[in-house]
Amino acid sequence: MFLAKMNYLEVEEYLKKSDTIVIPVGSLENHGKHMPLGTDTMIPDKIAELLDEKSDLLIAPTINYGATDDLVGFPGTISLGTEGLISLLRTICDQFYRYGFRHFMILNGHGGNSAAIQAVAMHMYRKGAYMANLNWWLMAGQINPEWAGGHGGAEETAGVMAVDPSLIKYEYIDLPEAIRNDISDEIPSGAWTSVIFKGVSIQIPREIKDITDNGWLAHGFKNDAPTKAKPEWGTEMLNSVADLIVEFGEAFGKAELPERVE
Ligand SMILES: [Zn+2]
Image (cartoon, rainbow, N blue to C red; front, side, top):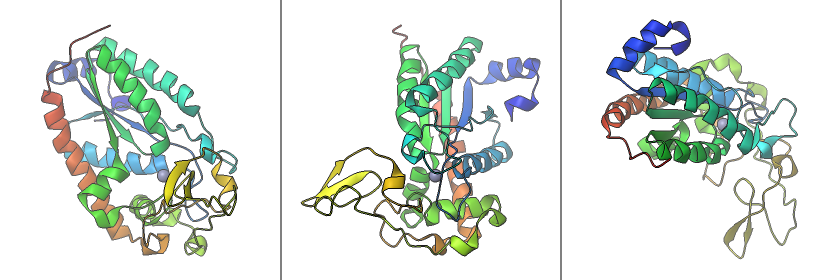
C-alpha cells in the first residue's frame, strides 16, 4: 500500500495491525553514459511496486535525492551530503514515530546513503524503535552471487532494464571502465575511491570525475560489464529481492522493540 494514496483514517487502521513502514531512499547521480541519473531511485521504486503487489506493507513516498558527494561534478548529479540526508530522514522518521511507527525498513538504492541511514537507525534505536537498512544490490548479490556488480555495471543495468529497457542508451553500453591513476602511478586507483599500495587497499576520498570520465565502475567485480545485462535477469533479480523483503518484513515486524534509552 502506498501511503500517499491513503487518507489518515486508513493510516489509523493500518497502525492497529502493524507499526512497520517501508521508506525507499534513492539518489540522483551519474551511472555511466549508458544509464539514467535516476537509476538508484527507479530500481527501489520498482521493488516498491512489487512489494505493493506481494504484501500489505505500507510504503512511504520515495526520497529521490541522497548522499553522493563523490559523484558531484557530473552534470545533473545532486547530493544532499550525509548531513543533509541525516537531517531529512530523521525529520521524516521522527514524525512517523510520533504516529506510532516503530519498525522502519529503508529500501536503499545507493551505497553512499548508508552512513546517513546507519546514523538515523541508531537515533531510532535509542528511541525504542528498529530501522533496517535494505541495500537491494547487496541483497541481490547474496541471493545469487552471479548478480553482484559495481556502480553502473551489469547488476544495475539489468535492474534498470526491468524498469524500462528504453531507459538504457545502448550506444554507450560497451564503453570500458576507463579508470585513471589520478593520484600517481605509484599509487594506482582501486575500487571506487580506494587506491592500492603494495597490494593493500587504502581510501582517499575524492570526486569520481578525477578517476573516470565515464562514471561506471566495476568496484573490482571480475568480469562485470553492462553488456552482460538482460531484462529477464533484472526482472528475476528484483522479484527475488522483493520476495525476500516481504518475508523479512513479516519476521522484522514481530521483533520485540529495544528498550528506549533517550
Ligand atoms: Zn546505483
